[in-house]
Amino acid sequence: MIGSGIAGLVAALAASTRARVTVVTKGALDDGCSRWAQGGIAAAVASDDAPDLHYADTIAAGRGLCDEAAVRVLVEEGPRRVRDLVDWGVTFDTQDGDLLLGREAAHTRSRILHARGDATGLEIESSLIARLRTTGARLLERHLVTRLLTDGAGRCLGVEVCDGDTGALRRLLAGGVVLASGGAGRLWRHTTNPPPATGDGVALAHDAGAECASMEFVQFHPTALALDGAPRFLISEAVRGEGARVVNARGERFLLDADPRGELAPRDTVSQAIWHELQRSGETCVYLDCSPLADRAAVRFPTIHRTCMGFGIDMSRDLVPIAPAAHYLIGGVRTDLDGATSVEGLYACGEVASSGVHGANRLASNSLLESVVFARRAADAALRLRAEAPPPRASSVVEAPAVASGPGDGRERARLDERLRDAMWDGAGLVRDAASLRAARAVADDVRAGCETDGSVGAAGLRTRALTATLICDSALAREESRGCHLRDDFPDSGDEWLGIWVTDRNRGLRFDRNARTHHH
Ligand SMILES: Cc1cc2nc3c(=O)[nH]c(=O)nc-3n(C[C@H](O)[C@H](O)[C@H](O)COP(=O)(O)OP(=O)(O)OC[C@H]3O[C@@H](n4cnc5c(N)ncnc54)[C@H](O)[C@@H]3O)c2cc1C
Image (cartoon, rainbow, N blue to C red; front, top):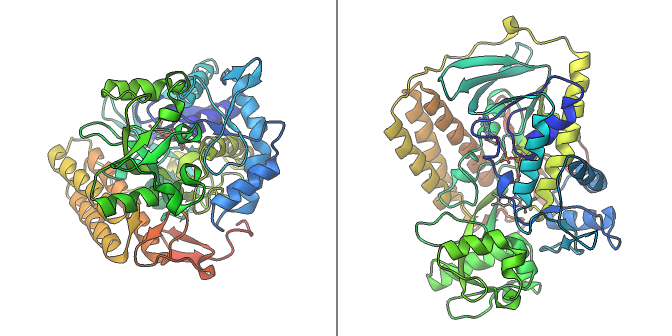
C-alpha cells in the first residue's frame, strides 16, 4: 500500500487477514488529508434515506459525467463499509443511541456521519492506525515512493522507495501494489491541503504507463479562512448547512443571486459566485456570518471554533473572513470498479484515483466514502491477482536512470516550487482560460527542465509535481466548455458534445472517451 490516509489504511486492513501487507508513507502515518476531514462521511443509513436517493444526488452533482456503475457501487456498498469502520473502532457521534446525521450542500437528506463534532478525519485516522498496529502489517513511515517498478510486459512489480532517515534507495517487490497517495492541492498557492498532498501518485502511475483521466476537474473549496500569514484552514460546508450565511464586505448576502439554494448550492456554484464577487469588489475575502448558529458553534464545530479563536476571531460573534482555495482532485489514475488501473498489478483508490464517481463535481462527503468503498475492492482485487499471477522477480524489473542520493540544490528547488504553485494558482485556478492555462503549462515545462540537471531525490519529487501539473493543464485546455468545477472564462457554456472524459497516458497522449460514463472499461 502506498499512503496511509483513509484509503491506504482501509486497503491494508482489508488485506491484512489474508496477506503480508507493507504500508509505505512519505511522512508520519497521519500526515495526509484524511486527518483533516471535518464534515464527515456520506452514507444512506437514515430511515428516510435510501441508496437510490444518494445515487440521484451524486449523479446530479456530477453534471453528466459520473460513471453510473461506479456511483451505484458507491451508494450501495457505502453503508456496509461504514459498518466496517465501526467494527474497526471508529466512533461516530450519536444522540440517545442514534447516529447524528448532518446535512450538507446538494444532499437531499441528512446523511453525513461525523465524529467528535468536526474532527471526523482525525477519529477515523487514529482508530484505523491503532487497529492496523495490531495486525502485524509492516508500517514504513518517512519512506517516499520514487518510482513504480514494472517489467518488460508493463506489469507493476513493486516500488522503489527512499528511506528518509538514511537517504538510501531500495526496492520492495509486491504481488499487488495499491496506490493510495492522495490529492494534489499543494500544487496551488492557496490550498486547504496539508504538505504531503503534492499529486505524486498521478505522475508515478503516468510514468509507469497507467491511464489518467479527468485531470481538469479540481474542486476549489469556497470557504477557507482568508487571513494574511495563516494557512487556508477549511471552514466546513457543514457550517453553512447549520445556517451560516455568506456576506460581502457591506454585509449583503449575494449567493441567492447565483442560485436559489443560496448557501446550500453545490460547491462550484458557491465558489464561482464568491470569485465573481471578489472580482467585482476588488476585495480579498468575503465573510461567513455564523450568528444563526451562535448558540451551538463551539459545541458543534469545536476545531473550527478553536482555530478561529487562535486568530482572534470568535465565530459566534465575529464575521469570519473566507476565500476559495484548491481542495480536491477529482481526476487521477483511471480505475475500474475493482480499483484496477490500466497497468496490471497496479490498483488505485482514494483521492489519487479517478473512479468516475464524482463526474465533473464532487458531492461533499462523498470522498471519504469513495475511499473506503474502493479501497476494499482494490485490496480484494490485488489479492485475487496475487493468487493467480507468478510472484514478481527482481531480475524482471526494467531499469530506469538512477537517482542520485545527494541533496542537490535545495534553494533552487524551493524557488521553482514556489513558481509552480503561483503559476497554477494564476493560470489553472478556479476560473481559467486558454492563455492562462498555456502560461501555467509553460512554467510546469520550465520547472521540469530545471530538474534535469539536479539528479537528487528532491529534484525527482519536484519533477513529479510538475508532471502532474502538466497533465492538469493539458486536460483543462482540451475541455473547451465550463462544467461542474471546471470553469473556463473563454468558454462559459457547456455542450452535449463534451459528455465524455479526457484520458491521457504516456504512449497515446490525450484522447476523448465518449463512452466512459456508461461503458465501464
Ligand atoms: C481540510 C480538508 C477537509 C476535508 N473534509 C472532508 C469531509 O468532511 N468529507 C470528505 O468526504 N472528504 C473531505 N476531504 C477530502 C478527504 O479528506 C480526502 O479526499 C481523503 O481523505 C483522501 O484520502 P486518501 O487516503 O486518498 O489520501 P490522504 O489522506 O491524503 O493520504 C495520502 C497518503 O499518501 C502518502 N503519500 C503521498 N505521496 C507519497 C509518496 N510519493 N510516497 C509515499 N507516500 C506518499 C501521504 O503521505 C499520505 O499518507 C477534506 C479534505 C481536506 C484537505
